[in-house]
Image (tube, rainbow, N blue to C red):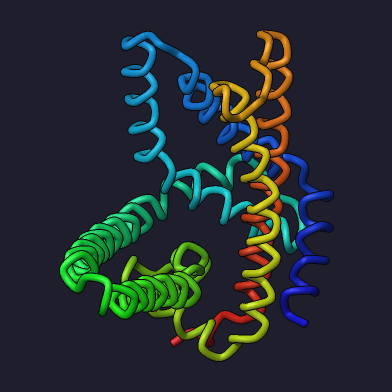
Length: 264
């Protein structure tokens, strides 16, 4: 019920506050150079795009905190860009710290997975035909466990940003409060996660198709986009980013408000 009622609240909040879509549109506009660079051959363009991507990563905690603050207000009534700025500034350090922690965990995860895969690959080759199948199944089993561990970790900490902004806590406490909130509402959180995964999958499919059309190969059998068609595709991508981004961010806020643990 929590995921459904939060969804209703989100639709109402976004419809009442279209400025949420405008703010999310900015995020889409920032990503446009990255999309266009996929078909660029100029080293200078690629370099500039890389610098813009780095700037985007540095500014994202500000954006994340700002739109969460706006979403919190939107669920209750009206919001404004002033809330975006104030919430982004007030929570930047904590959110940036949280992203650094996530980055560190991700690096350790990738290193561990690489080592396990490399060792498993050597074991498969060394085992020969007799035990090669068993070794391969063992490696596949380890990969499956690694994926499940990643999913479980994300499942429990996914509301760290909402916790930091709404509950005014630091990075570590944000993760703790997210875990505590999800622990008591596993089923409804699973429903929420599935809804977001479905939306993200559809949106991601469009982005992947656009990337393929930017650099089609003979094997793809896809036509190359004309300049005018590419402009239209970029415009559609930006608009979808605004709509999907506004809904997703506000949905996360509305849902967390329902499951958040009591203040301690």
